[in-house]
Image 1 (tube, rainbow, N blue to C red):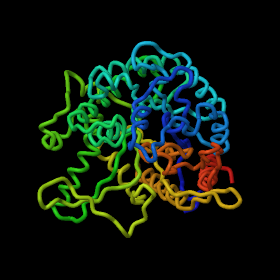
Image 2 (image 1 turned 90 degrees about the vertical axis):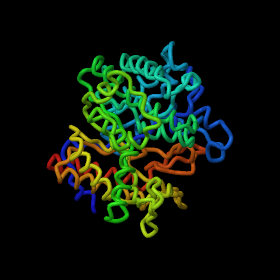
Image 3 (image 1 turned 135 degrees about the vertical axis):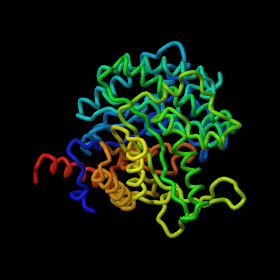
Length: 451
């Protein structure tokens, strides 16, 4: 599929993204406090080779040059996260003016370059003092988050017109509090269930703050959503797929759009129900302007003959990324169409989509990454197909602009369309960067009638 054949509508948002702990570095600069990821990554055995985000891409100091790369790329928007411990170092109490000053400068620089800022208010970097006091399983953390959001809106709400409250609450809750693979590294289902509910409640509270302080701004949340397919048409396999879909998708979609947790999954988790209090679900389900969709792969499952959890069925003949994730572009179209049919969101934005490959620089210093280019092209094609089917998809953000710290994988997984040479922090646009630049330029040219 050539860039000219992607046929994306006029006004479509072409973006790219990154997050604070993964790219900013400067963890001790200008009064920033300690986050759960600072503590977690410092513990032996938690990340590959003990790697941390202490320096990362040093975006904190190098953002003007990175915005230059965005401008050359033709980005319409840049998605980044605001580090809670940079703004409120202890999680509650004193607001760090110097931390807000950084995001003030960043927003102004993006706007000056003609790039819309798309900040995320929470991308997993809870201040460590709040974790010490109970973390996301504690309801008080929601109150602390609300106060932090108020401080951010008071500084940036006059210029930022699109806000994402939280990124991937499922991962923050279950990978961090049940599986122990992400910060803070706990292994308790009860903690994960409480954390998931409080993250959704924090989203609802944050949306209320944004509506009050910046009433013309758009508000959304980004969920990691994965299409689930049964391994066969048999009733047992279809039921297994339905259950996994409930665990990974509907557990978050239903409270946001319907104001209820799915009954079948409540029954599955009956011994550890979410700690709903009063009108929590009303707060969670208040209308939002867009749903952010983070999608990377699919699940294919069959029933466990012993009645256990759904069994994942490998697809060895398929292509896979360095993360071991199957490349299945049509799954994105299926997912977007399903969201339109089942939940009727006013707007969908693909807020993360991308692939990790083992990129290397060749003798002339360039980075050729044809696998990533093909991945992005096919997934953008699925977005275009969903739009033709009537799905209100308004934008697509490549994950990621820069190679960066990939959580427990350290620096071993490169998702960027810009190569980062970590010893020198040199930026080298990859072939996929130039491909994306051409897609953007041709789409805008087609929309204006040029060419």
